[in-house]
Figure 1: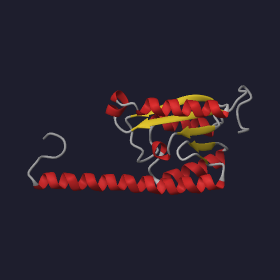
Figure 2: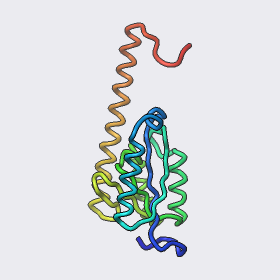
Figure 3: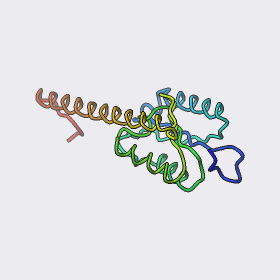
Length: 165
């Protein structure tokens, strides 16, 4: 990475961590595991690292406070890369992720995912990221379909589903 600020001697990566529910954020170990993995990778690459977290947010779209702030910083040249453990931490939408890759290329920053190990500066990495984005969107759609089917079954059984009346 050659874009980093004149004030920094090493590239700066923004390590993005996310879990979907507040319960996972308070009681789970996922955020700690994500942070540890990203910190180790940044050290291995010789990058400085700042952690950015969205605790209790879905990846159905890119409208999350931490991610929005990180993307603005990347676009403005205040950081060089967005790094995450897996694509589904960043996005579960093919179109959102494709737009994110286009934005990164246009603005001069990159996306790095640890699992599988890919860097979107490489054509094979970019292709693989698109395939993974399609799989993540498919998984999100399946979860939604199963939830709707389960709720319909419970309603058919006479059980109230949803918020209290």
